[in-house]
Image 1 (cartoon, rainbow, N blue to C red):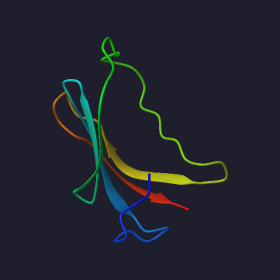
Image 2: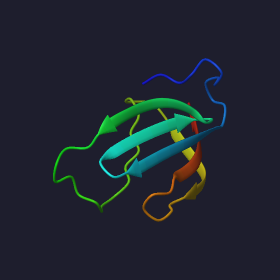
Image 3: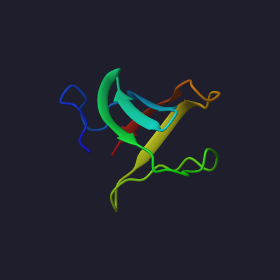
Image 4: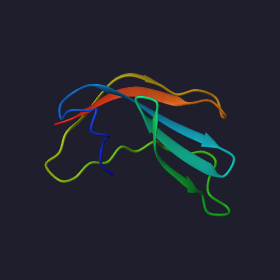
Length: 79
């Protein structure tokens, strides 16, 4: 999806990914961006993957992964 208009290309922003029960939510600088329900039987453990369009760039600093029920936090910038 697109970033909110308050985030300029190349600017650092706070990205939160919150997994609670069968719901996954994303927030950018505290602003809700997306929410979805996970399919039945979705794995409760595994890897965290970041993806961007071909030729894009993701930079991450201060990445934190917290226990279930708490947020996964980081700062990201898209080139």
